[in-house]
Image 1 (cartoon, helix red, strand yellow):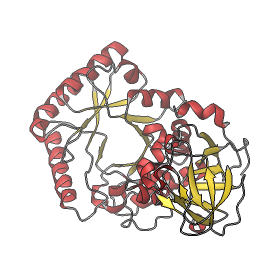
Image 2 (tube, helix red, strand yellow):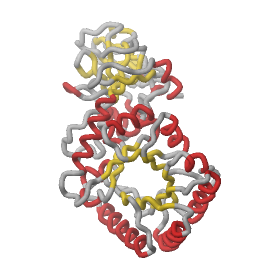
Image 3 (cartoon, rainbow, N blue to C red):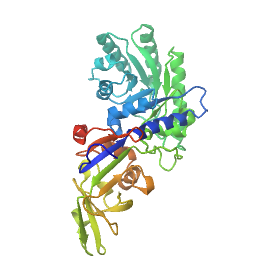
Image 4 (tube, rainbow, N blue to C red):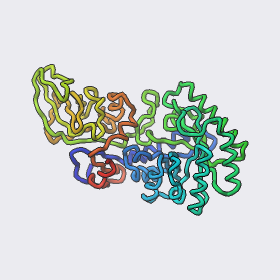
Length: 400
């Protein structure tokens, strides 16, 4: 891997892996079961799940993504500022948000309520354009989205505004609560409720461009829920949306977090390591100091449970993970200061993965990749087209 000189510790993202994953997911959801092609939305919220919003958006488009998905107005505008001109859906706004700029930027916005329909219409009037709006319904997640009691009135109002030329309803959608557990009864219940919502919308006169239900897990595990479009977030980055339940799809984790081993020292039996001496050497061993801590996204809850990879071998974290550093047991690994440490990466040849860290921390792989950053630089490479990237110092502000 060439490009800008490595730093003390950094995030390296392979955009070729991102393109591969988007293409592969499109193949999976268009396996012949659907009567018409299923469109792909690549979700790039949260700074592209920690992989870099603009780079992820570009790679997804190059791989054929029909839509990009973001949570906030700021993310939608950042996608546009990076030069993207394709379809983008934004879904998380508040009453105090001004939608004028995002509507003017040709972004589809989401409404959960009559008030949000009015908010979009007002923004369209200010921007001098007809806003494109998608309606999100709550089918059982009990998070964002219109409750069932509001569906009929919301659809009727939307149809009226559409007939008056004040907005265009481009989609109706929902989000599953338990798609990573394919046997959970909530999946059938939510899909049935969504079909009820679609029938009500049609009866009100709405003919949306897209109807969508599936996140990554549902896209892969529940063909009946693919409808017109699927929203693939975590799987687009090569991570398993339902660990232990997803078949091998050939996805490739795009993110590697690496560091330079700062120090090597020998311990004797009885020597305690790190705060609280939560690990005490049972015998002579060698440990290494890795200059990454919880301020950089290495979860403290993974203390004494996570592993890193050095010289192709897994080395356990020993003792409490600190704000700026952590200690690993090298055992018989012939390592010295300056050697490369992979905290997590693609998992090739048995290397440590983000899912391994998630299991050690008692969380999900989403949290591992979206929270990593802090003082780490971020570099993008392209293993299909040759090295490229921005110096870590340039990317530093992306991780405040």
